[in-house]
Image 1 (cartoon, rainbow, N blue to C red):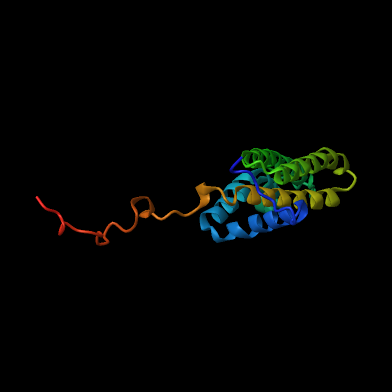
Image 2 (image 1 turned 90 degrees about the vertical axis):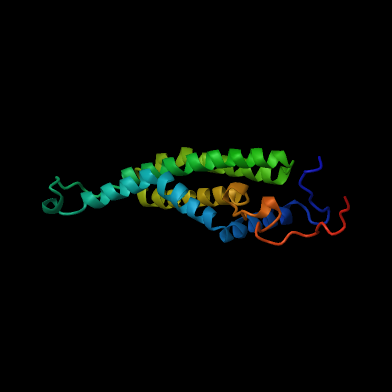
Length: 190
């Protein structure tokens, strides 16, 4: 249990959770590779279905003379469906990852947080499609908010991962290979 999460008794679980969320939210901003990965890997490629539906919606709303297509009334159903399938996959996999990584350090507070997030967003993923027909704009707004929250949970889960950290090339060798070596052969007798 040497690597267990240590929470000072005076601090309590709530301040620890808030501290962890704050540290995990702000810390990764300094890592350029991490931010690029979030933007390209998660937002661009992960949200490719959303971007495709937005492009389809944009093209469908242009005059037929420009696109040569039959005009389609502006419908958000494809965009809503894409968003409602994006956030559950990201939040589900990320919550499970946070549970497993927190279990390695016996961090029960972060495990409980991940379980809570998983069930809250599972509930949203199940209920939102039922209201999409009657309240499309509200469901779209809830889906966008849920997607941003899912990206944030991914951010706090993966921000401290060493794969995104910049490591100095000379670090394993003890420093710059061109530096003068300490010591000498002056005291050596043969």
